[in-house]
Length: 344
Length: 182
Image (cartoon, rainbow over all chains, first blue to last red; front, side, top):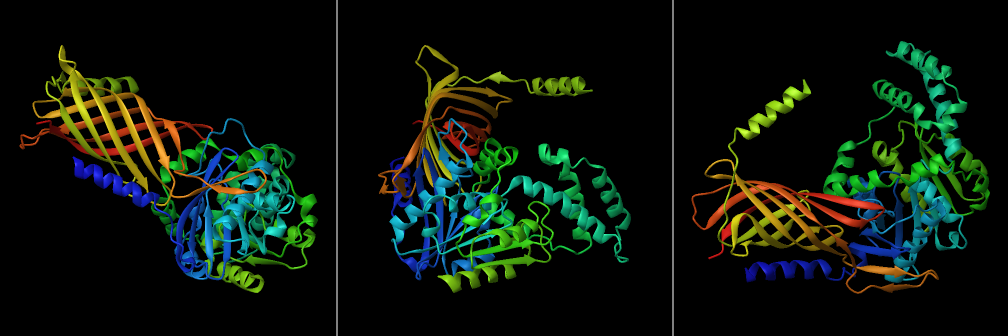
């Protein structure tokens, strides 16, 4: 019995032991305690150049969802990548009695950056990468006082920075895609596209903002047809399942996601930042899937046109929908690396 | 149709000829617990017959355990309550455990507190406390080894509260042994 207890004690000591300090092989978890929440940041990769890429995950996701073999091979070999579980998501812990605004949630990003600087030095070069809801959160953070001065660059992929605009553009993209497919004589699903288009035109567009889920079945049908037509590449779901089950505790993630959906609260509240795009002057890389029926590429085009940055680029991934980092990961990561290398 | 199915199930369950199992000597309980293969845990317990006067199927139990989420945290917990043992046959058992008194402490590898002015300070032994009542239902059988009272397996449910905005139910799988105390 005693030996078992000693083993248990040893296991806890090993777990509590301080992380490695070798910047070239970072592999550690640091919690950020801020405003009542404890949020884990999983830091992996090569921090020799002091370049830290902070990942803001999308709605219903988790930090380590991005830790695919491609991210490990291409990004972690060059930079320190910080996969972070946002407040109330996945392994984060809090005693959260009241719902928080997007602005209050975005302050957590600032807290995370403060901890990274405290741990790895004030001279680290920080890049922020937000996907989907992570784009909403990241852009909200950038608009807070002094935030852009903390960073070298901002990478937004499929960022839902304006929910009413997202819903309008989703409807328009569905119409475009269904019409463009019809004249194609090779399209085996011509009648299905025609039916989809007819049904879309019969929808009352004004009702979509109050009930955006009306479009969901049409989006699902359209994505299925696009996949069958070889217009889009399938996302590498094997990587997604691997990160969900092996890298992460799926039970904590799933249960916490059921309990808290800040992106839906923001959507239902009509959260919109288009009017403030001009205030963002940080060098920016925008990455979008051509067939992103969740957050259409029109939002990327608008951000490119209206954002205040001098250094801004939009890259459209021609055969992707909402998860281009899984479907066209090679090009996606090459663009990210080129952006970071240029600005680090 | 649903009523007939329910009735059939109930009759099938009763046909096992369930009976309470008298537990008259203390036992040790050792088990593996975890909610997936990557967060392993160990649990130790002591089962004590009811204070001498009430030897029977309901006994007192107290457990201490730990499980580990390799990427994120280590959890240490303790719980106590009652355990009921019934039998399907001479060698097959089931145990129902209810532990209203439970406490769990999470431990993080490293944590920093961020103040409103942006300053940070490192936290000593970071983690959180949770009230953690526990329930479990296991099925077991008695092997030929006399020292082993039963080998069992089954689900275990922890409720962690307050957790984020609500309760977090943690469903574990456990597999273990009940050993004779002497």
